[in-house]
Length: 316
Image 1 (cartoon, helix red, strand yellow):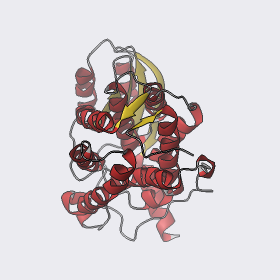
Image 2 (cartoon, helix red, strand yellow; image 1 turned 90 degrees about the horizontal axis):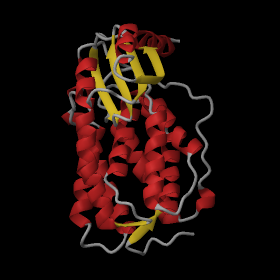
Image 3 (cartoon, one colour; image 1 turned 180 degrees about the horizontal axis):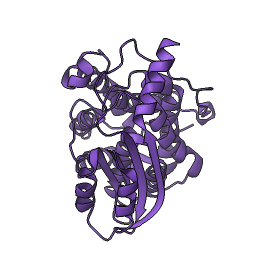
Image 4 (cartoon, one colour; image 1 turned 90 degrees about the vertical axis):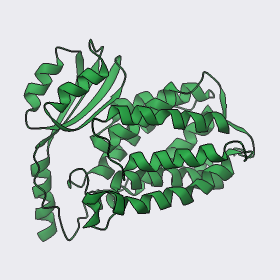
């Protein structure tokens, strides 16, 4: 049992809250995949977020220090991040870790401020930030936390009450993002973040770590929409890498990636960053990256083939 009627939380509470939030994503990844329309209708946002979450769950352990725990979570997420949404979520966690002071416990005002200060990290990581996505939902959630941070005594009421703001912000993504207008769906990445916070809220209410059994959906299968986007994929390959010991600035790396494609995200720091880009020339890009740092991981997914698989499964 964990008490929440207190003005602070420690590392162990954060650890179990994160697992609870992550578990919600793992349990709903098929649903998130189903509504994935933006930035590419390849139905993998749920899978990508789940992969990012799983990397944290599999690689960190409880620690009493809040600072140590948030650092460990951020590092594991950055290494395991997958896809546009996963890298953005990892960058949010990276911002949280960078903006958290070296404390064993953290108060509500301190937490709210660290969330607020993490937002520029997300926007700076993306070459062309788009509103009506996970970015907007996190930003509006942060505004709520900061509006309440001095008026409410404990975390419980603020986090629980924040779901109203989150659900409203999520519902508005359909009208804010043009790509979602036709489908009528909410943004998949934003949905994942709201589910993550809802999982944390369920943990706050139940306060029982024995209920945190992390199980992914068995035999994940993509459930597809009746109408697929007819939008042509102009940059075929979803390309990712972990690059360590950069000899250039992050903004310069963004520029290199931007010249090779779109959907550019650079998360992390010069010491270790995770890159995501949609490009037609992944081999050329990896060759160029070797000149600016040490590549410790690389991955390429063919989005045309993914979309063809979606269409095939729809009609079978």
